[in-house]
Amino acid sequence: MIDPQGTRSLVPVDSAPVQVPVVTGQAVDAISDLKETWRTVEGIHGHDISVQLQATAVCAGLSQLEALQAVVAMLQQSPRAVLNDIAWARTPGPVVGTWQFQATLYLSYPDALGETTGVTHHAASPSGTA
Image (tube, rainbow, N blue to C red; front, side):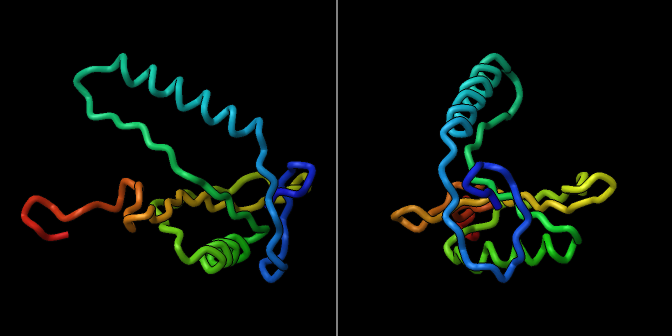
């Protein structure tokens, strides 16, 4: 969760939804990272490499259960979200000597045609089956 000052904070799962401000610096950094990645990929030949741009959300908790409850809350709040991938991490907590758990969700949302951009979701295979 991001507070109005742009810092992360742990919020109880049952708390009311909050507005998350768009952080312009992060958007500029993401565009810069994407450009750098494209330049890198363009210089590599003989390998199958694609560049993906996906929304991510980091759900954190002081226990594994809290982090997973945050994931459930995120997906309940946004039923159109398609979870393409999830990464799990145990990281230093907000207080020295403590740990927190983070689930990074890689998300996409259906476009006007109902299709998503996630790499784990695809159209029918050449044989005609999904």
